[in-house]
Image 1 (cartoon, rainbow, N blue to C red):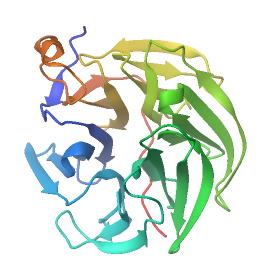
Image 2 (cartoon, rainbow, N blue to C red):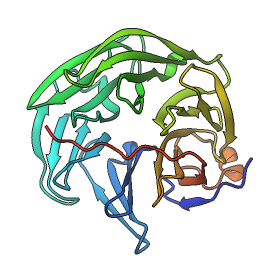
Image 3 (cartoon, rainbow, N blue to C red):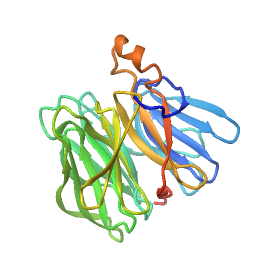
Length: 289
């Protein structure tokens, strides 16, 4: 166990998609299993929660200051935290078996969001790209879409399939939004954590939360593990860079997967933890399509 501070003791069932708003100094995240979007204003120490009628997997901020979010039933925009949902794309998959999970925007403002296929008996998880009112599927070969991130130059896209313990790389054309040349970036041995959500720092290192692995790993662009950091929760889910200098790494965690016995040792599981890093992260791209 480590002494990483818990900056938001949210006790979320499944905290995911931490996202830093550098303009308002606010940290957002979702609790997928509680159908919630959270906003923590670091300047005023204010914590607001919006409840939806269905699971929200991921979201991005927009250039206008609103949101685009991937819910189970599709993708929606809303102009402010509590504003009305406006349909952008309605799901054409079986909502009983499939929902959106991880996602973010590319540097040209396209929104990418991946789905997970709950039965996990076929590779039906897909990576969708939303731009100018249209949907394009970039990849459909995962059980659970996760770990989406881009290299600082935007030419490499990362994408993980958590249950299969693998992170992939793609060549990415930021001009056209095309992803090609899929290959393994890194595979983790079974029984020692699975690659969940991730973020890339300004030097191109890929930081991955190892679900069921109790740690965060920093991986070089060449796929070598450089550093490992223990987390006071068995199930870290994602990381995000933030803070005024982008040198704070926020770590979301899951509470719902812990047993009552485990929660005695990890009482703040489901919270957001934070650690200082030496290399700043990248400012999060915003939806502009």
